[in-house]
Figure 1 (tube, rainbow, N blue to C red):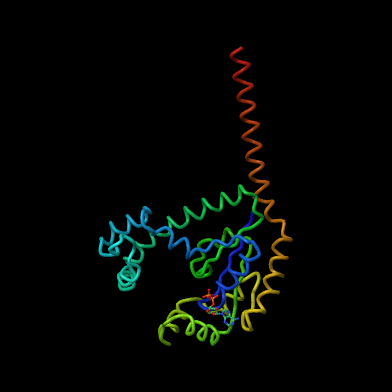
Figure 2 (cartoon, rainbow, N blue to C red):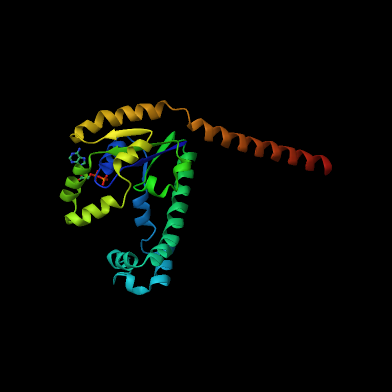
Length: 232
Ligand code: ADP
């Protein structure tokens, strides 16, 4: 199995591309979804958050009061670091477990939808290739304006908090241009999938796993043989 990193900028159309990929039966693991799941009621990360930040970050039903926590960490960098130190390991533990299961199920590749792929660089080293969904900055602003209830300043701040899309585009192995109608995405996604399906990189990990499994089997046989001989 190999991993493909999918990213973009806010409003560039990453979720739209993710939906298209999923409609082709591709497994796309969204790191934002993981971030939501690991702080659900009953999860150990939520208990740790309550220990650190107090029960005032909980809603009456016991679930996380995201806006409240957001206010706390927005105002205090050290608290944001504490929160990340709780949430990030929980996200990656779950992600690695799921990836292991997909590997066992014989997936050729899995796409990881990572909004801040190039900003955090955290998983870049594990990826076989990267895909950036690109559009012009004025289109980003327009699309976010239509989608979210944010004022111009908020939108600018959020876009400015990310690496510009023109720069991300230069880092990417494949670029999906989303500066036209959404229909234009369809042939680009089909072409990308053709390229990914044509790759043979999944054999690297499979061969390594087969080699390890083979070595363990040989060792086990030799051990059994040795003990049967010495005890006869
Ligand atoms: P991201 O996940 O990168 O933030 P989305 O896929 O959610 O971006 O797209 C942002 C908004 O723009 C959504 O409301 C989406 O429907 C819309 N959108 C995406 N692509 C296009 C396009 N090519 N033309 C017009 N609107 C688009």
